[in-house]
Length: 342
Image (tube, rainbow, N blue to C red; front, side, top):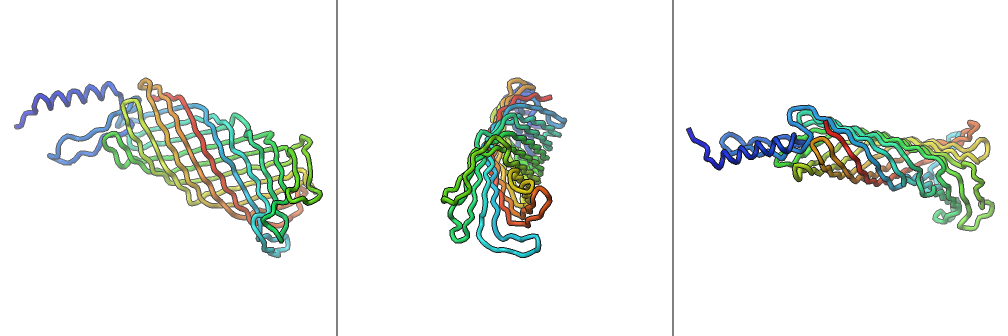
């Protein structure tokens, strides 16, 4: 029988000591190289987690979002009798700001260091500081000429976001873990805005208007986004880990409702039903102060593009017809949170 050398025994002993001091790991043991191929390569274990067990983490902190949701409408249009009208696009564009603060609550369950279930809930704690911009192109003979422009101040705002996913680590070696997953993201943004001023850049008469403090428009946008995800974790040291992922959704569903309250006949209500796709990028880092307490910081980017049909009617229920609609949302955010592992 071959007897291990003293240096081999010392190295193995040191590995046991390091594993005991560093705590349980986020990335599980690497695959064996095969019988007779040498020692198994094992990644450094991160504090607060244990292989072959169930581990939990909970964190909370602020997030700052920036970006906007822009929707446009234009021809073709269909009147209530079914007659189709063709023309240019867009007729109108509204840009709704997304510069505001949120509070986020993150939860993670890790099973056998191979499966992870993540859930994030976000709620607004401020109102967008930028104004909503409304632009209209009304002249068919010169569709590129901006005829009406207005700005409205966001007077009331609600945002609610839920993001859940499940991840499977299929490659783990030397502190590196590669995983795939599926998830679902829900977003709801709800606005009220007071018109500040309106005028005609092209000089059309009858469009100059100054706001009087009344809410002139409300807007609600809801996204339903199932997605596929691919990512990687890197255990840089026993206390520091980095994580990055990309995600794509080919089946985004979006619904929005725009109510121009100051229009005639009870105001004009426009409801859109759209679908499209979305791309998401997430990068974060986690530093563990103790085996149970950690801090996490991250960056997120998302681009959503959808299109469909908008149905219009007066508030009194008088139908106006339907028109094509496109919507695009760009969302960038950074966050910082403090968490506890148990």
